[in-house]
Length: 284
Image (cartoon, rainbow, N blue to C red; front, side, top):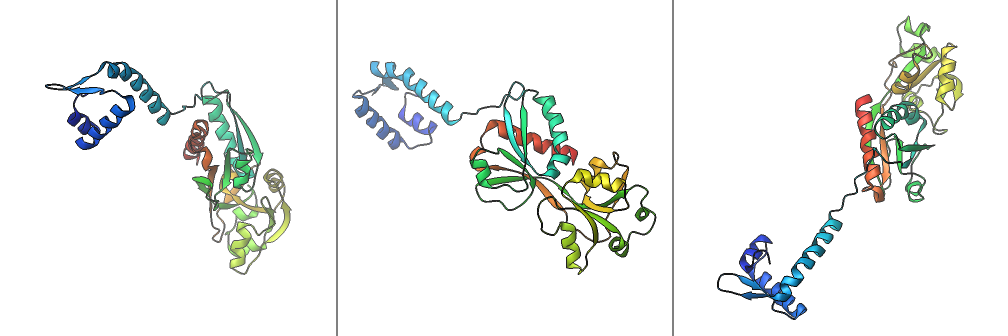
């Protein structure tokens, strides 16, 4: 109808002329009308074709809108609540920075945070979680992940501790009294795994399950802790702590965000994931 020419229509649709001619024959049979009649210079539409054309065009526009539909998340006015799972580490290190930006950009949006040490597809499929943030691991194929940032362990103690006044050697580290946290499981921590490879172990005098009492204890004792640098930086000024690199190699780790593939195209979650990544890129 637009080109009123079979060859021109074929070129526009990147098809052959016989293919367009065949389609036209099928349409004539379907509508029981010639639709387009060959004239001296162009195809002339029949009365039925003129009546059908605007309705067909409208239907095609509606179909096009369905296929290319994008549901843009109006974060400035949204009052949506997002359900996030975070490890203790992510809550301490990332959550305050994330909430600051969220409150600035989307004041009506709320976060409901639950503590998780691991993420499985069942949590997302049961609609308990929409986004998880924690230690980067191997996840089942139903889940997708994006690396956010990396961290590494440091040794921390109160600012006047003797370790900051003498050479910090592996021997001094092993002789010191240590405080450890067992946040995720009863397995050996990253620190103790590294020492085990050297056939060594540290003198752990106190084991806790939470970061906060750990730093309060370090501030008032001669114990030494070995914690992730980003966590230490959250508390060093509050508790007058100081940190230094460990005298042996301890592997670092990566923090990532994870979500279910079925939520890939949720515009709200797409926006939130982008915000999380932007906050991490800026902060870490």
